[in-house]
Length: 299
Image 1: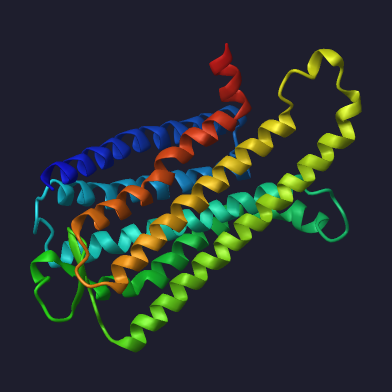
Image 2 (image 1 turned 135 degrees about the vertical axis):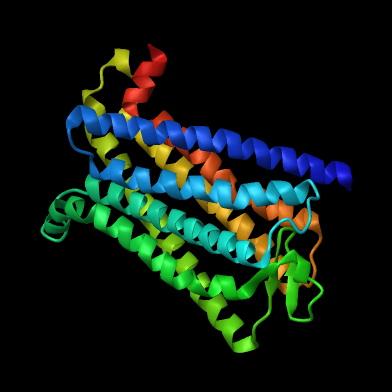
């Protein structure tokens, strides 16, 4: 069991290092683009908020998870545990909302202009930064219940403790409060994931139709090359699929840990590992899909 926990700790520690470097590179890339163009595009604004949320997920969730995997028990006091758990949930919720906003904005930007979408397509870039800030405020408010439900592992023998997650313990408040929290957080996840899948499907449809319309102008010499439409479709599919897969898996394990008292530490380590996968992989997926980065790598 010690070797298993050690392996989990090393994997989570590697995620923290790789993911933090990747998000820092992505953030610096768009900050440099801001200085070159003297303004940051709406897509870059969303990316900057996403990199901040992903970095906080890796730090607030990964570092305590690593220490717990190395069996450094009771290293978080009750107040510190509440603080860490609160900002971890805020960052994770904002990563979900920002990824949803990113997918929706991309779908709107490539949507053929018509009388229903033209005004929204024209005005939406002005409100992107405000929507991102509003997302942070919303999750800061909606997750205010999290500190009340978490306690330090020292208090895990308390009868009100539902499950020990290694570095913190989930405290059972009452049936009504727990049910309300479950409904609220599940509804947010379902709505965001649904919008993400719908907007991504719309993008794939529009890009596929556009590719068919312009296919006749491609020369025989260019047919062996990957078209920009195909590259964009592939990047969108990979990014959204990565988020949906790892978010769904981590949600399943979290639900299992919530329903059963005192889950084993390997389950808590698995949840941290799965939750950190998207923040680790997403910056590299976004950098790879950026045409400027792709040309630089090929050169």
